[in-house]
Length: 415
Image (cartoon, rainbow, N blue to C red; front, side, top):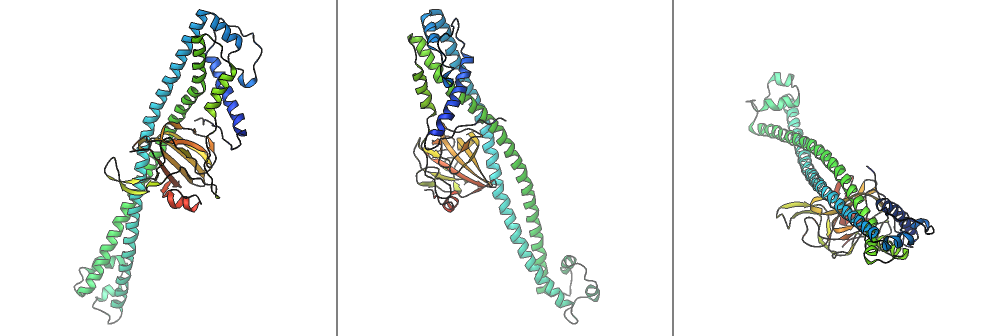
C-alpha cells in the first residue's frame, strides 16, 4: 500500500510554498501527458521550472487560431474531465462500501469489548465470593477434624483428600448438622457459578480476538479503498481546474496567462486556519458545546440502547475540524454510521477519530503527517447523523475511552 503524502501548513506560510509548488509541478506533468496538443509546436521561450507543464503562449495561440485543432483539443479535454469525474465516483463508491464493512466490524469489536469486560468482572466477583465461602468451609472442616470436634466418620478424618472432594461428599453426610450442610452447599454452588462465568468470559475473549481480526482486515481493505479514492480525488483537484481553464480558453478563443493558472492553484492549495494548541501539545478538535456524551445512550435514529463511541461537539456546518495532537493520518474516508471519517495515530497507543465530516471536507490523506491544531476537515452531518456536529473519539491501545476527561488531563478541555 502506497501512502499519499500531503503537505504541512506552517503558520508563517513558508513551508507551504515549497510543498505547493512541488504538488503543482507533479500535477502539471501529468496534465501534459494526458493532453498532448495536436498540430502544435512549442516555440516559445522556456517557462519557469515549477510551471514548465503549462501550455506556452505559442501552444495557446496555435490551438485557438486553428478551428480543427481547437475543436479536437476541446473534445479531448472534455473527455479527460469526464474520465476524472467518473474515476472519483467509482473509487468513492468502493471506498464507501468498504468503509461500511469496516464500521460494522469495528462496532462489533467495541460491543464485544464491553461484553467481555462485563463477563470478566462478574467472573472475578463470583470467584472472590466463592473463595470466601470456601474459606469458611475449610475452617469448619478443620474444626470438625479436631478430636471431639464433630461427627465426621473416622475414615473421613483420617483420609480427608482434597477440599473439593470433600465438598462433593458433604451433601450426603448424614452426620453433618443442617447448618454445616448449608455452608458446604453454598461453597459448592458458588464455585460452580464462578467456574461457569470464567468459562463464559474465556469464550467471550475468543470471540473478541475473532472480531478484532475481522476489524483489522476490514480496516486494511477500507484504508486501501480510501487511499485509491483519495488519489482519484487528488488527481481531479490537481488537473480538473487546469483542464477546465483550457476548455474555456479554447471555447472563447482567447489566451490564458500563467498568472491565471497560478492564481487558481494557489486558491486550491491555500493553508487553512490553525486551532489553538494547549501547553501539552493538544488542541480542541472543534469549537462548540458538548451535545451528546460518551457511553451508552438511546440512539436518536435507531431507537435502541447503544454505545456512543465518542463525544459530540455542536459545531456548525462547515466549521473547521483540527487535529487534536501531532500524528499520522491512518484513515481518511467513509466509515459506516460515522460518515466521512478521519483517524490519526499519535503514538504511544493513543489515536483520535473525527466523524460526520461534510462531503468534500476531508482535507488530509492516509500517511500524511499533521501538526496539533492543523485543520484536517470540515464539520458535516454525513452517516447516521441528525445535524451538523463533530463526533470526536479517543482510543488508548485500541480501546475506546471518554474524550472529555482525557482532553481535560491534557490541558485542552472540550465543550
